[in-house]
Length: 272
View 1 (cartoon, rainbow, N blue to C red):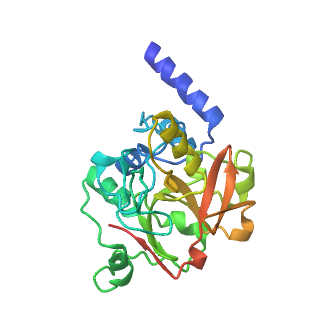
View 2 (cartoon, rainbow, N blue to C red; view 1 turned 90 degrees about the vertical axis):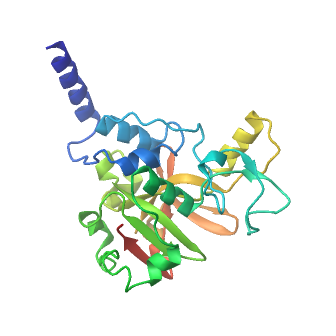
């Protein structure tokens, strides 16, 4: 009887914090993905509270972005870049993490799914992947959540190709017009988790380098949550980093960045 009363009290307390419209359910894909984000992450905390999960961040600062990063055993170690890019100097060492496909392939492995194809293959092989491409590109972004499932992938190309995993909407995680004031008009727009460039992460990994007395250069991104479909003109904040403009909402102190599919040269929603 005491346990029943305790559970009822917990439920009541959650209802006081989150509206009944919150819909996120526990998924193995979310368990895996959120374990690679930073301690105290807003979405990780809400996921645990809403689902009863107890997913812990594997690393204090989350997993950084590292071009070509695929090896789990090397995460958070100091490595030379695999290839020289505009972000990576071959004469310097960096904190090793996942690149975008390293992250999604790791999620697939953790959840018993097969490896996905190359990103170019996922976008361009229409005959092979006719049943995997979701026919929703022409639908309003605020209705996409009615057709997407947690674990679906968004594969897009700007300068280079990038892959992200759908995790739900702001409303699914209990946000309302009052608690997500800046994003109140976009509560049902798709949220994705991914490992990619993020202007707010270099300072974080610089702290990691200094705390561990490492000889390394900070990385330029990491595993983070972004929103899709919002027009850049609808984002109240922007910041310049590495000659790129990043648009974002300030969501209770979390910088929710935009992945702008409207400027992508190609993209698909992809279901394994």
